[in-house]
Length: 332
Image: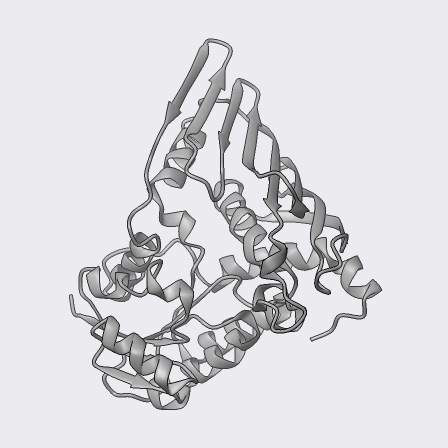
């Protein structure tokens, strides 16, 4: 077992608590260098998080001989390009979700890493969290029998102050994010469903912009079918006054419900009664996932989300908003 020395490209908000500190706290891990195009912000991050090196040039970090693996935590529009550079340098890649803006970009990332014979990991970290693994356990032990349907509903109250006429958040800028908040948030849910039930065989959907505060879609509905035959549906709305966050898994003997994002308990409902589990997230929510990557790199474990897994979710999202993209001439 040896210590994996990490470099981070893009030390923004997601790295402050969710991921960055985990590289220091995981076993056999060390955060050696960070990079941000704004030199002052890169230096400030390094100082606050006790990181020895900082850069404002990604190429310098990638080729630092004291960096063994690179975590790409930039917006999705640069995921492919940075992955290709890291892979060409012969170093393992850990990339934020969504993996890229399109399925095609994901395939290019996978090809580059395969060519360079380096692993490609994706930050769909719910696959490693105890509360979602508990649901996996319940499904594997068939407590609700054969699964029939899956239903997803996510409603997010709109905060008009978040969307000024200028300097929109990158998450609602299509060319940067690949779409609107659907890409940022629904990707987590679609990935965990892939983890539970396997690949989606076909998907279709409708999208619209009803709020007119930015150009990206702000409401999406979808229907999908897994290769196993399970039927799924989803409704994601980012322009309402209410808040809803639920995944409902219905089987022949009962139902399991769990939120994607909130801390509500897991609920099991059966004819004979019900049960619930309250399982808290770790302080740094990506830490179990990052530990699984480190363990795999050391030949002592397996990360549950690689490039091929992340690409499947990108393919499903592409299918769901394909018509919206065509109608609005969205190309990358």
